[in-house]
Length: 529
Image (cartoon, rainbow, N blue to C red; front, top):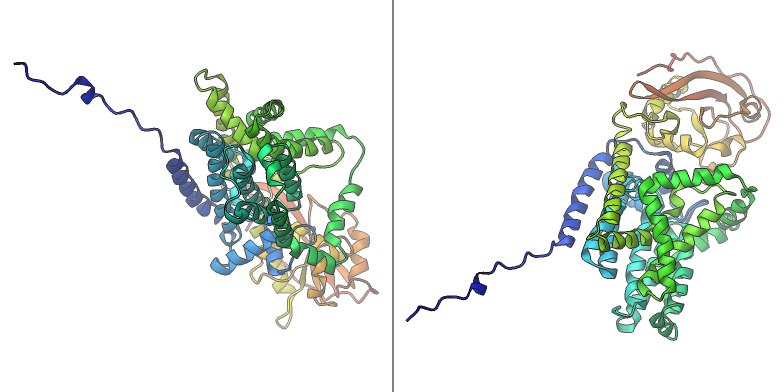
């Protein structure tokens, strides 16, 4: 009798396991976070970072030109690890890692884990989000909370969503995230209306609006945002006025060059090839949302309104690179979905990979620029080099001009110079900005009482933002004025910019001229250290 053996099927190799995209994204996020922590400790602060660090030294419920989230995070971070570049940037690195994971989760929830991984990868190859993960600005927590809100919204309004949960829990979580986003930046005021419209245009969302939970979630969002209301009520609604009337007053007539600058900056922000892909994706989302695709409708309403708003405004108002950041989140998910769906044909996926490759090179160049002077860069736009060099010269002036343990007040013309000097001068002094010389100083207007009147001052002005009326402005606020040697700062051997300095005797906000200050012997600091 023939011996029976195992059937050939028993020896069939098991199918290859699908890639564990979640593990790869988690591992990549951790590796990137470690590299970014190292990098964040090497590069000088950008002026905006130094300004928000100044916020953290003057802790308030809110501030003149921004809500308080960035200040609160920086204050916590520097308390934990000290007043260093890493101390200021740690919240950005942590938020960048969390954003990577949230975007993966969003893409995986809407389409597939592979789409989630592509979304996370694409985000990290953009200057806006990839480089933004080491630069601490209000946009960092804004995009994190915005993306997290979209992730929760999926469960609330999509046909296959998990629903509100016990006692409407997810609506309250959504309200909390909206409130935290608004505590980060005023741009988040667009988020609640977009959520409402999304709910109205999806059957499950309309059904949820018959219950109290969405409205109580909105109340929670406003409660979280209430510190900003309280601060404004205490300060004559200064911030709300600045963000509304102030912005409207700066609107000009149609100026094509502003639109050109807007499109150019956005192409840099996300990469030129990816920017074209995202514009194409926005049009596709509009079309698919009109065909009753609930996922497309959710992503469309979270992205396209903001993109359209800033694009329409751009010819009449300077739209900064980072303002559009939240609008790209949903577009990145949709673009990644399109790439993955076309993987058999290869064309669109190939374009997507190429766009991410170009973006990655752009991000890498931006990372290396401050550290490697051989990388070509328009030095006028280099805002992260030379601040330590400037501070060392200003400190010499302070030491030689000071007497009996006192040193002159430092006044930076523009918040950028004032904030950088406050950070890089060894004693982190209380500096002042345009307010001290009769100009608008943004948040410095509210800190003017922290500096004593009648003391001498050193005024520092960047040639990129010159003190054009120094001949009349300085005598109006100084007993006497003496011009000091200028200071040129460098990136390697390349000159970045020149700072002009004046010694101001008996500084005052208003008043009569005083006597000439004593003679000061100063070395010529304009050269290299």
